[in-house]
Each structure stands twice: as C-alpha cells, then as structure tokens.
Image 1 (cartoon, rainbow, N blue to C red):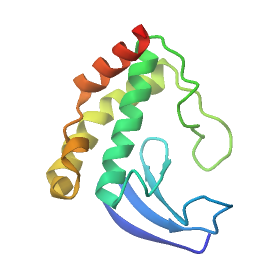
Image 2 (cartoon, rainbow, N blue to C red):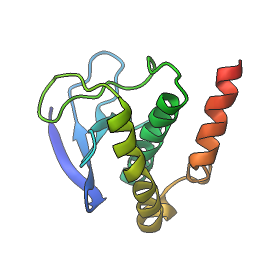
Image 3 (cartoon, helix red, strand yellow):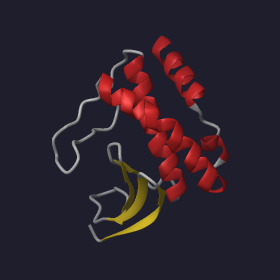
Image 4 (spheres, rainbow, N blue to C red):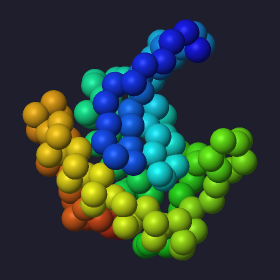
Length: 140
C-alpha cells in the first residue's frame, strides 16, 4: 500500500481511500469502509467518491442479507473476515440479523449527509428494489 487517508464517515462507519501498487490492470486505488459491521473493499470505478463508497457498502450488505433471507446462494458475495484476522466470516442468521438492524441507519445517514454527492440512479436504489431485483433474477 502506498497511502491511505480518511475520506469521511459518521458514528460507527468510516470510509478511507487507499492508494495501492496494482497488479496488471487493477485500479491504483480502492475504498475501504470499516465500522461496527464487517469491513468491505470497494472499487473506484463504480464508486467515484467516498459518499458512493458508503452507499455501495450499504447496497452490498443489503444484497447479501436479502440473498441469505431468501435462501439463495451467496457464492457471488464478497468474502467477509473476522475483525483483525484473515479468518473467513460466514453469513449466518445472527450476522444477517445484525446487518439487517444496521442497514437502514447506514442508508438513511449516508443519504442525509452526502446524498448530493451520490448519482441519482444509485441513490434511487432502496430495500424494496433490492428485493425485487433478487426475486427477478432468481426466476430467470
């Protein structure tokens, strides 16, 4: 890693921008979102600023919880790790419940504080649209 700096956040959640030595065609930077639920790394192509990284964090975990709740495979979900380790963390009922209780706060607070920095099509995604998209993809 070349450099990392705090971009923004709010109680229980923060986003950092990390400059890295990329391999081959990888991005030279990434967003790292950490908080009281598992950390997540996000690309800088789909998330052009820290506000979109925070919203993307909400979206990834909302998607994972919905997949879990609907009994669908989690094989396309990002890997989660136990805090301060490389030990894999499996999404189970307890973790899904914990995430589910935090996600509305994360989405609401991100939009309240940084909504003007999030692209409209991304900002329009909500819990219902995530459920509908997963249901539609499960039918195909």
